[in-house]
Length: 174
Image (tube, rainbow, N blue to C red):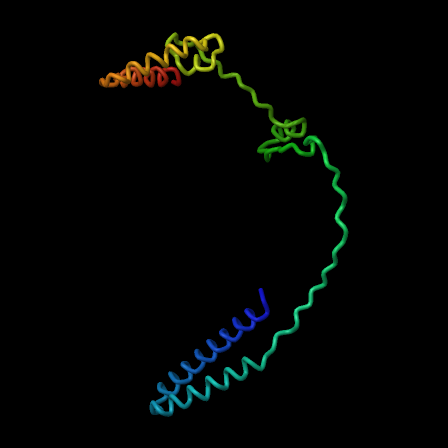
C-alpha cells in the first residue's frame, strides 16, 4: 500500500472518530438539560479536541528485518520421479489399517464381476474390441442415418426398453 493512501485512510479514521465523539458530546449535553446552542458548542469543542488528540499520535516507523538468503539449486529433471515419500496414507481407524498403510498403502481390488452379460447389453459391449464396427460398417450406418433424417418421421420410443433395463438393474443389485 502506498504511504499516501495509508495516510489518507488514517486521516479519515481520525476525522470519523472525532465526529463520533462530537455527536456523543452533544447528545450528552442535551441529555443533561443544556440548551441546543450549548450542546452544539460542546460538540464543536469535543470534536476539535478529539481530532487534535488523534492527530498528535504518530505511529512508530515500521521496521522489518528482512534477510534474503540464497535459494538451493534445483536440478532440472526430464521426468517426474515419485518415491515412497510421495505416497498418501489415509488416516487409519484401527491397528489393522495402520499396519496395512505402513506396508505400502491400500491396494485397489476390483473383484465385483458381473454375474452374466445380457446379449442386448450396450454398456458392456460399448468398449468390446470384437464388437467395434469396421470403417465400412460405420459409413453404411451414417448413410442410413442421413437417409432416414431426410424424411421427417416420429422418433422411435425407447422408453419401454429403458424401463426394462432399469428394472433388470434393480433386480441384479438386490
